Image (cartoon, rainbow, N blue to C red; front, side, top):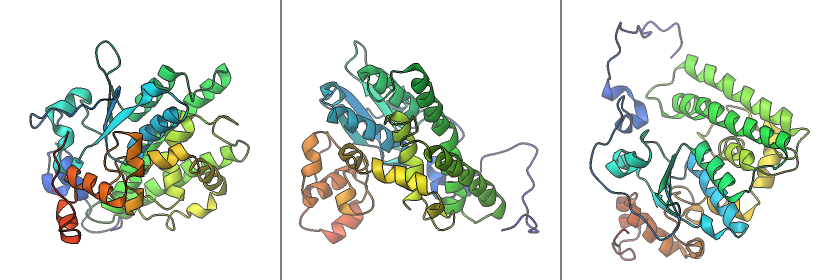
Amino acid sequence: MTMNDATSYVPPKVWTWNKESGGKFAAINRPVSGATHDSALPVGKHPLQLYSLGTPNGVKVTVLLEELLELGFSGAEYDAWLVNISEGEQFSSGFVAVNPNSKIPALLDCSTAKPTRLFESGSMMLYLAEKFNAFIPKDAAKRAECMNWLFWNIGSAPFLGGGFGHFYAYAPEKWEYPIDRYAMEVKRQLDVLDKHLETNRFLCGDEYSIADMANMAWYGALVMGKLYEAGEFLSVADYKQVIRWTEEIQQRPAVKRGQRVNRVWGAEHHQLAERHDAADFDKDPTEILKQLWRANWLKKSLSARYPDSLPTPARG
């Protein structure tokens, strides 16, 4: 639909909520906050409890946790619980107590005297990096550069996800103006990254940091064709330095693991519905399918494909 279409929208004087106009995610978005039902969050055995889904903001945190474990920080051990946003689990009383904004991910640090709640992925990354004194440059100037790019991601990624991604992939109709406007913004962001990476191996020079993890989860996924099926539309192959940087980061073992956590779509060997131990990554496909069954995400389709192999396990 173009701007000149005769059915152009005329805003009313006062906005009212039309529940049917939200597109693919109409059922999970609403203009008020707070819990819709009482339900406690599960708590596992590890110091850190993550409640998430394998979207880019979730991947930021799981990649960092896996990188910390790779360095030998046992205090970074974590349980990663799947939050089924399509069923409104992010509006449970337990989830809202950790994240009043009802957005994934949410993190609880149970190693402190009183459990410390963390919401917003950038806050989690900075908290964990400072807690373990890792993946933040110690040099003051480089640390400032790390913060620049971390918070650039926090401010920029919503244009890619909530802006471009929504209107290009999820809106109930295709509208030219918002798609063009957000495509322009996303391409400018990619160009910003590409030009910076022409003279820098990583975003802070030669030192891999939380800034790289945060941006790779969004812009790396985009240039590798993993977001919104928009690679050709956005000519992502033009951003050669972003691709080079992404390919190097994605070869890291911790990144490969972190990208699987709480992922319940795509190739089965790239999925891990929930992570409670390092050994979970080595489970055979049947075990992974059992986790998907536990998550209650794909119960109908899995029952049709594997009617005899998937018992119903209890969650917890």
